Image 1 (cartoon, rainbow, N blue to C red):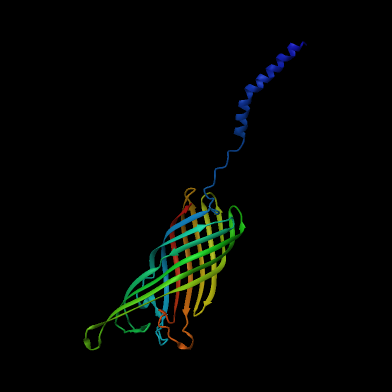
Image 2 (cartoon, one colour):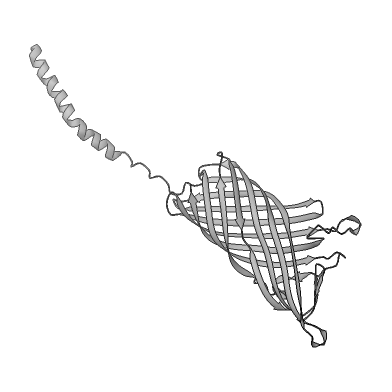
Length: 300
C-alpha cells in the first residue's frame, strides 16, 4: 500500500470523528443527571432574618404593689379587674448571624391590656385603698424586649443544635382609676394610682432547628433561670417552637408558639426605709404569658 493510500483512510476516520463529536457530547449530556435545583429551604445560616408577626397573647396575672407601710393586696388581674385574657398584639424580631455558628436575635413583644370592673372587695394598691363597689378602669402593660445569643455546637447543613443565653426586660405599667360613691350619698370620689417599673430577666438553655424537604423548617427553644439583683428577684422559664414554610428564597411564613412563666419580686429596703424617689417600694408581679403567632419571615 502506497503512502497516499494510507493517508486517505486516516483522513476519513478523522472527519468521521469530528462529525460525530457533537452527537456524542449531546448523548453524554443526556446521560448525566440534571443539576440539582437550589433548595428553597436553605435558611438555617442566613446572614439576616426579619420576623414580623401578629401574636395572640394569653395571660394570667397576679400582682401586688405595696405602699410606704409595706402593705398591699394580691390582685388577680383577670378576675378582679376584668383584664382580658386574650389580646392580639404585634411582635418583631431580627436575627443576625455574624459567623457560621453564632447568632444574635433581638426583638420586642407588645402586651398591653385595659379592663373595667366593679370591685366586689376592697383592695390596697400602693398607698391608695379602693373600696368595694368602686368602678375601676385598669391598665396593665407588660411589654417585653429580648436579646438572645445562640451558639451551634452542631452546625450541619440541615440540622442545627446549640445553647442559648437570653437577656431582656419586662416593662410593667399598672394604672388604676376608680370612681366610688362617697359615704352618706355625697359626691363621688375619684382614685387614681399609677406604678411602673422595669423587670430585667435572663435565661439559659438549648435550641434546635431542622430542615425537612424543600420548604419546611422546625424550631424549638427551652430556657430558664432565677436571678437576684439588689432588691429584685426574677424567675423565668421559657419554652417555644415554630414551623416555617419557605415560599421563595427570600420570603417565608411562620406559625409559632411560646410560653413564659415569670415571677418578679421587689423586696422592701432594709430596715423598712421608704424611698420617696422610687415609684415601686415593694411588691410582686407573677404571670403566665403565652403567644400564638403568625407572621412573615424575610431573609435579607
